[in-house]
Image (tube, rainbow, N blue to C red):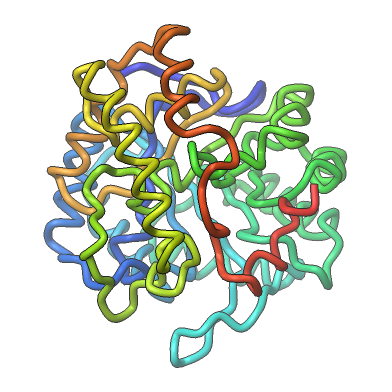
Length: 332
């Protein structure tokens, strides 16, 4: 497994990480035994970075991960946790809470659910508009000093917020969506993190399945799958996006790889500071994704990919309108 370092101050990790969100209901039903087996397969293949959030399945994802990691040496993997998203009894998202007291309370619960003494990277899932980022990062800094957190990360924030956070404590990485369909990070955020020596853990590298090469117009989303309301999966947007995937499939065939492998390799090739997170829920999909590690893209390959899926070609936003308005990264 190839390795990369998360920023100038962060830990070394495998070039691909495993995003665990889909194992706890965000994409509908997932088989728990298969999810745990997938985590085991990822670790056995050399994947070291495991990403979760305390609101994925309202704690279920952390408990699942804790079960999967039981008996494993703690120094063999890195756990990245997002916090702050608030959910009601019906599962609806009801806002964010990144006050210092909430930071410490959320961390205490996460440590218990994960069955660990510390979290490797702790990050607010979104910017809390009611709390200055300096206060949130300051609280995480206290947890670093107390030994409960090793590194501070950020998620979906813009360039100005990144600079303000870094003034309080070193930031190892920014977690943000980045794919052939989502390239807004390139204008201001990528230059900022390069300048400051901050890594990027890129989620949504397959645009939640759209860029996997396995999605079809006839595929439906089941109960609990938020893609059912995502703009890119709706009507004419879906038709246009799948047409782009078919153009990408031609490039993948010429290269002798799958569409998913090409899309993941493209993200990894954008910069050495980027670690793609793949959201595999099964060992089969994980094995396909890990094949991207060995895909070498030449300048000619990159040109063909860009021609197949030009910047800005995707139809529809990555989230519904209300969620888009909550993203500090979209105001960068």
